[in-house]
Length: 318
Image 1 (cartoon, helix red, strand yellow):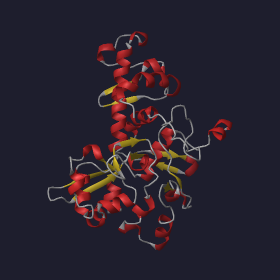
Image 2 (tube, rainbow, N blue to C red; image 1 turned 90 degrees about the horizontal axis):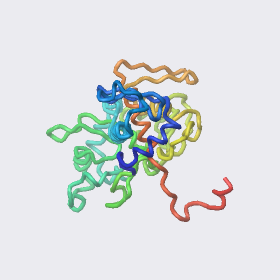
Image 3 (tube, helix red, strand yellow; image 1 turned 60 degrees about the vertical axis):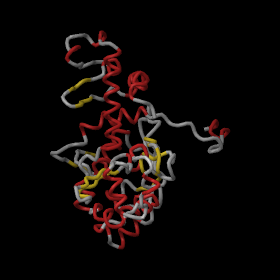
Image 4 (cartoon, rainbow, N blue to C red; image 1 turned 180 degrees about the vertical axis):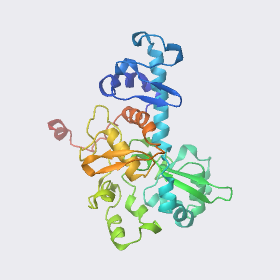
């Protein structure tokens, strides 16, 4: 995974081709990267200077800041979806009472080993839900964000992009290691996880959720009622990709917004006339996050495939 600073020059070049439409806001700063988009709204020190005179260092700093923010959004931003996963699905109750680390790992959840105290895996009770609560309190469960009170009770829980689009390198144990952002989590079983919710216990819904299996999800089922799960796609190698996902019916920003609003159930706006969808939220937390999230995704290069994992001659033929 490239570091923000190291990847900034490469991203700046890439943006000349792919990022001309993206305007970015972080905090109180609003700018358009002039070297890559054709115009520039700079910070205070460059406000009166022509775009052609803005230093490459300034552009690189802006891009590096965006990459850092994009990584935070990808890994940790829920867009306020706790209102759905907690208040509607009551998943905090399920986790608190019944999801020990062994169960969590068995349904494909991953643990970020870099935030664990040294030696904890040798002493932790992996059969106790209390250990899962402790991991959530450490922010160690990839793709989950939880608020845990002083009595170690989960009061809020939500999900992030990383739940399905990150995994780990298994360097500490199976399912426990360093993050691999952008890698599709083909172990996670979203249907089995959702099926634990007290709010989703009807036989018809349970049958659909339990039909998906590991690494598969249907991002349209809750909209069109048709059960057609597909493999969770990776979020790397997207530079220059205009239409993404297996269906190719939307751009990367389209799918980012669609998933954030209609699947994660974050607070934001989304409109698609094809689906007769027009979601408006006065507390829009999705829109401000989209440019930095997209940029971070574009920075994630596709890894070299392992030897023996594909047929080189067939790949050459296309």
